[in-house]
Length: 85
Image 1 (cartoon, rainbow, N blue to C red):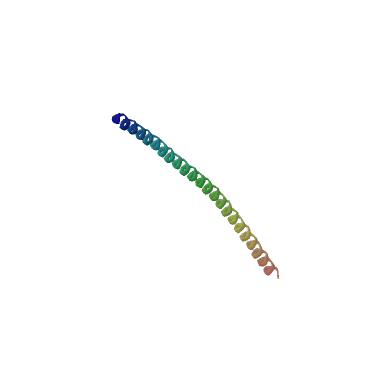
Image 2: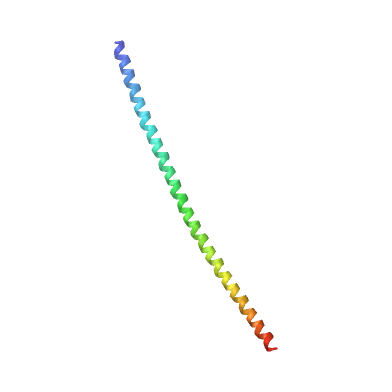
């Protein structure tokens, strides 16, 4: 009878170890999925920020060109005014 009890206890412990391994593997898979989700989210945010940065640079460049054009026109106007005086 003692052998049967030990054998049953061994089987129960083995079953518990298998369940624990399945649980741990599931936890590891879950952590990996969460990590991948975070990485994808950060990549998306980075792409959006890069797009906004590019748009901002284009806007600044356009405004700079417009400002330089206005300054050049003012200088030409002043030159013409000085020449006609």
